[in-house]
Image 1 (cartoon, one colour):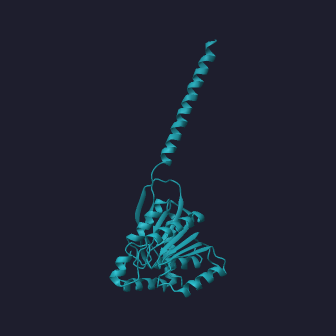
Image 2 (cartoon, one colour):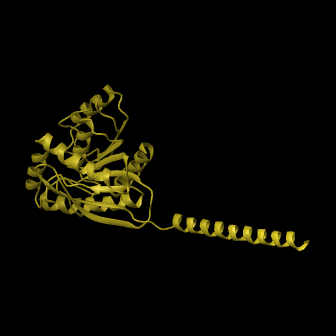
Image 3 (cartoon, one colour):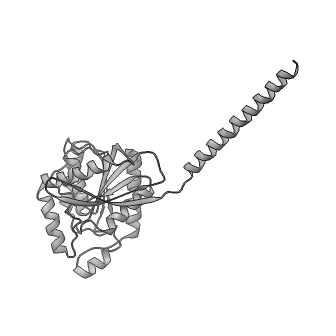
Length: 278
């Protein structure tokens, strides 16, 4: 009779040890999951409006389980190319799910500024179609398994910057927008439909952006008490974030120039914007 309590005590101690072992193993598993390195996965995607087939590229961290903010990226006037996909990969490295969109249709690209200008004008000159293409991309991004559909931003380069600013001014449901070497004389100027935080990073020596347009843009933003930051980098020209800018500038006789310092600073400013927005 006296041995029974001892046997119970031994069984209890064994049970506690077993639970502790399981807890330690669960904790170890959780730590392993948390310590997994970022694994960027990029996928080509197709989507469409009623009139246009579109080809994009989505990038995200395949090792992350939680839904994360989504970022749309609109290309330069050259079209959906490797550059905009690289930016999508860079955002995925930071923990976002990024969709490099196609605003021209069928992944169309331009090899010459004349064609690029025509492609860009065909979009900006038809705002309903531009909005439809942008919204189709946004719907695709929001529906992705790796995206929190309540947290969406948009960034753009050159032509793409004008697109995202215009969409934001048109009332698009965006938390933040950022435009790089982008014109600010827009089809839709800032008004009370603007909901997003706004960042514009331009070269102070960009001949494509007139002082008058900058003044008009800032005046409009101030009139609605918009949450924005306009940055002008001294001595910096157009297309300063693209490492192909110098070659394209020389090839076509255009005032384009890559600037590593401005590229780095503008990317840091983007990260600050996204951190604040999300």
